[in-house]
Length: 159
Image (cartoon, rainbow, N blue to C red; front, side):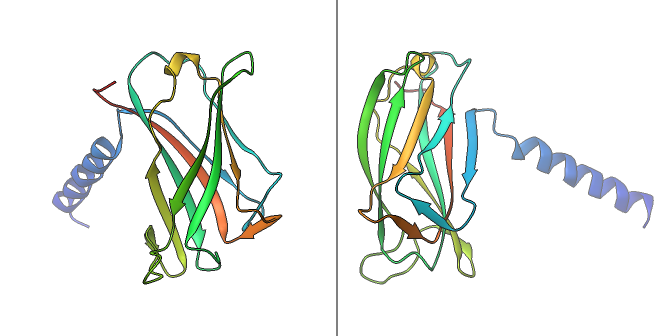
């Protein structure tokens, strides 16, 4: 490989690294399930610490497969403070497949997809949050086809 080609590849790699970093991300974590099943008693918790009062929006990421048997997913979200007091308790309704066509709504290929869904507002100040928990609420002991759950907190300019 010539030196000019190496230089060009180095510049491209540097651009990917620079532009690939999201400076607005306040928090990001994922929980992978041991098997592609989410049991009703399995609560997924994300510990939030050392945050500021910066305005933010929260995004839930769900990685799923075509083995998931419904078009939607009901998830209970509980936000707790450092004393374990509940700050918010809400039921979320998330469509994973188009209810009419059955087409997956997330991004992906093959039989694996990831759906990013902005969660509803009304979450308390970031500095008050210690833990955000999610629990599947589909009225079944377990649901198949859910591989992982992720949470992103992204800085915004609006309250």
